[in-house]
Length: 151
Image (tube, rainbow, N blue to C red):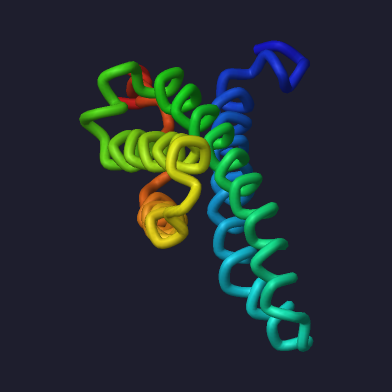
C-alpha cells in the first residue's frame, strides 16, 4: 500500500467514476438546462422571438459539440473500465453509441442540410432523452476479484 492516494487502485476507480458522473452532468444537464430553462426564460423575459432563435442557433450546436466530446470521453472511460465489448453489450455503452451517432448526425445536418430545423430539434431532444436514460444506468466500475482470504 502506497502512502499516496493517486497510486491506490480504489482511488483510481473512484476517480474514473467521478469523471463519468462529471461528464454526464456536463452534457445531460447542459442540454436540459439550455432547452427547458434558458431559452424559455429568455422568451418569458420578453425578448424578441428572432433574438431567441438567434441565441438558440448559436448555443444549441455548441451544446451538441460539448455532448459529442463528453460522450466520447465517457466511451473511453467505459472501455477502460469494462473493455471494448461493453460498448455494444452494456446498456450504457449502447446509449453512448446512440448519443455519438445522433450528435454526429446533428453536426452533419448543420453543414449539409441547414434548412432542416425540425430534424435538428428532433435530434437535440433525442439527445436529451438518451441522456436521461444514461443517467438512470449505474456508473460503470471494474469488476474486482474477491479476496481469497475473506472466504
